[in-house]
Length: 287
View 1: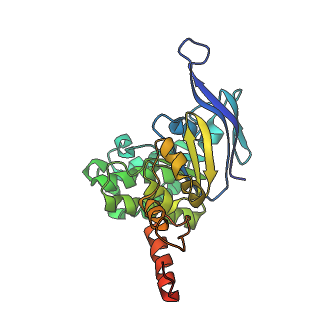
View 2: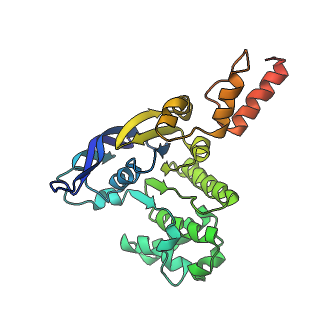
């Protein structure tokens, strides 16, 4: 079933003169095991939405459902939803606090009430998942490089073995190589573990490279849903909303103004464009 959101609305400071509607009538389905991209201009409601999915906020109206766990306005206990979802905020390394990497990663599993043997197993499994050398387990997290600190923070979330992993701008502040390496790791986990991933990003290139379904939010409303090809084909609408399409998609649009045989607009990554052009060249297509 995955994640089902029905009629979700959220009003901050509801019932006061300072009330502000952050989400309005959101309906969306994220299939189990999918890699979803969530995009939208600043202030569109993305953070509010993912906090509802993670069980950090309660709906003003509507429901959030993950499998048999349902949260609505009258829900008293948010724990069952929180136990299913792991949320990695921007700059998660700022949340590191323990004296060693292993203790920091173990914090969540300990709070889940797991025994020491299982906690130990999960700590080193999570370190392996994110590509951290086991020898770093006894080191202070503050002695790690920036990229290693971020991996340690993500390992702390993965050690709780969530069904859903939400990443809120996870590559902010990393160099291009670090960005690619981190998201490649998450994508591999998604494929190997069948984990549902929700990626929030301002980088259309990141979204295009990894997501299989996109959700576009603006002013607290869901504006577009579809595959990356379907969403990026709406370039004019996206630009009206303050969003850009991937560089390759823009290049395809420009090339199609000159070609008699257009390139499919579903092509929006360098690798896909390279494969398409190579295939055309081998077939001897012109123009």
